[in-house]
Length: 394
Image (cartoon, rainbow, N blue to C red; front, side, top):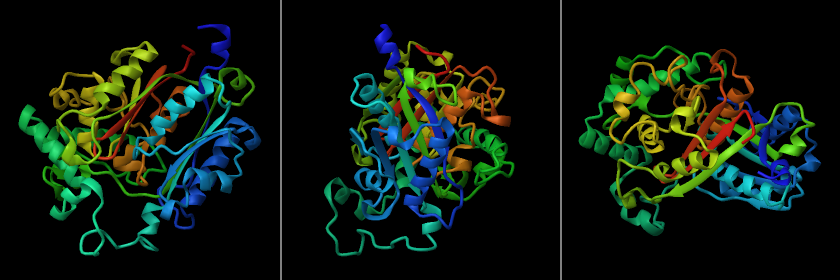
């Protein structure tokens, strides 16, 4: 790497979380604002330095789209992005922001997210839908919606197929929920902190066979923000930089009816690409933050990233491997299953990975954490963004 390119190497220098998991006094836009304010305070950058902006959110009718939020936040940008890949959008944003910073299109990028999903259900969540509304069902959804398939049903089909092909059990999926809950118990801001056992998971209410209630993510409010800039600018800031070592994205489908293989996700493409760019192997990763919309999401992505062979995810997650003290601590903030999931979780993966590499994770700190991966899943196991972060420069 040349001296010039080293100076423009992208790094994460600021992170911020808005109030969560329940914040009835904040709407989606205010979550964006609060997270941004805390990220700016975290790194000490003046808002006027931000010349790149990216966002996705949970506000009504696009009120928190990138252009609207840029105006609201008074961001004078040279680079803007509102790519929408579902909950993985933020990993795609890091990929795009890193390229923009390296190529000199902008110097400092703010990424924000905000959602009042939980509180909104008691205030203003709309009840209109396509079914029975008289509205024309758009695009490929016309082939799925009439049959009543819902989001959890799509993941249930993937779980059932994995069980059929590889003998994966409900108890093995439950190991993921139990590991994540053990970390939530260390996080005062987690939605659910009571102890959880494998028996608790498999005996909980069935939501969509074979997924039980505790196989499914929580519903919360919340927001987050991260700030990226150049390695050169980071020298003068408050916190040690976290280096973007590799980033990649891939898509296999969007609508679940078009998923070619229900046991394999786009992480099989984006994961190895991000690892290769970073020059590391799965065994080099000290902690992994994976979008845990459902337990099957984690299991499939672990396989696709190369932590184990396809079909061996069930045995891989056993024996406490994913807990603190295990080989691969997972979702050390408590994840979407137990801590915070306001509808799109990808930004929280990046924030927790950054905290771990900075040594700021408190009781949940992974010892000697040098390399972390954040892997977001968007849609119905559709678009997978993978980011490898490091404590040291590449």
